[in-house]
Image (cartoon, one colour):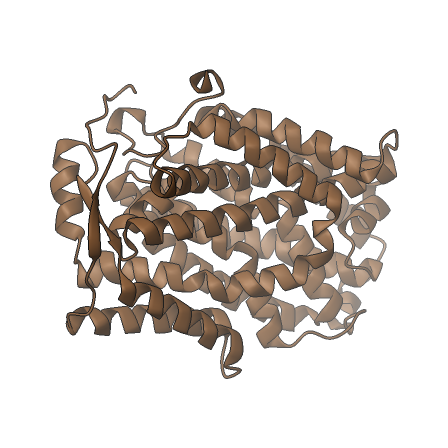
Length: 442
C-alpha cells in the first residue's frame, strides 16, 4: 500500500498545532539548507569570476532579496500551516495555477537534487573509487530518498548530525588551505577565471536559493509563531551566505579553481569525502521533500488522484538520481540564472494577494477557524498568469538593474494594481477534495 511508503506529512492539509515543532528543530534545518555544499559551490563560482569585495557585494544583495522573500512567504506558511503549492490556490494562482507552480517547483528541485548528488558523486568517485561517478550518483540519491520517505521528523534528526559535522569539517578545510596563503593577498587578488559582472553575480546568488526561499512555507508550516520564522531566516540566510559563501570565494582564489571537489580535497584530502557527504545530505533532503509536495498537489489537481507523499518522494528521488548520473551538473550556471528570474514573481504575487489585495484571504481565515482548508478554490486567475509571464520576461531580458529584483517587484506592483482595478478574478471553481478537519495527532 502507498501508506506503507513513508509518511504523508500533511501534504494536502493544514499542519495542526499539535504537530508543530520547536524553533530550534526547524531553525537547524533552515540553517542546514543555506550552510550546504551548494553554497560552497556558489561561493567558489563567484570567487572564480569575481574579486573578493565584488563577490561580497553580490552575496549581500542576493541575501537581502532572499531574506525578504523567505520572511514574507514564511509568515504566510506559519499562519496557514499549508505547503507552498497548496497556499498558491488561495494566494493568487487558483487551483490550476497552483498545479503549474507545483510542477515548476518539482522540476526545479529535481534539478537541484541532481546537481547536489552529482557534486557528491564527483568527490566520492575521485576519493573512494569502487564505483564510477554515475554509480555514486545513484547510491547517494537513493540514500537521501530513504531519509525523506519518513518526513519532517527523520529530516530533523538528520540535520542534528549533518549540520554540525559539515560546519566542523568545512572549518578544518578553510583553515588548512588558507594557512598556506596570505589572506590579505587573496582578498586583493584578481579572479582566476573568466570575469563575472556584479549583475551576473547577484543573479546567481538570488537564483541559487530563490526556489528554497519560495518553498519556505513547506518548512515554516511546522513552526509555532511568526517570530520563529523571522529569527531562523535572518540567522540562517545571513550566516549561510557569508560564512560558507565567502569561504568558497577565498578558497577559489587560493586553489585557482571553481571545482568544489578540487578545492576540498586539496585542503583536507580524504576527509573531503565527509565534507561532501554531510554538506549534500542536509540540502538534498529538502530539495526532495518540497519537490514531492509539489508533485502531490499537481497530480491531485490535474488528474484528480490522491498520491501519497511517500510514494511521490520515491519516484522523484529515483528520477533525480538518474539525472545526476546523466550529468546535470554541467548546466549549473545556466540553471541558476533561469531560476533567478522565473521564480521571484511567484513570491511577489503570493505576498501581494495575502497581505494587500486579500481577494481570498477571508476564505483562508474562515477555514482556519474550522481547522481545514477552504471548501473550494478558483480554477484559474488569468490576470495572475499574465503578470507572472510579463514579470519573468522583464526579469530575463531587461538589462537595467537586477533581474531577480525586477521580476519580484514588478509582479508585486502589477498584482496590487490589478487587484485595485478589480481584474483579479477567478475563472471557474472546484471543490477542495481534502477540506475536512485534521486531528491534532494526525
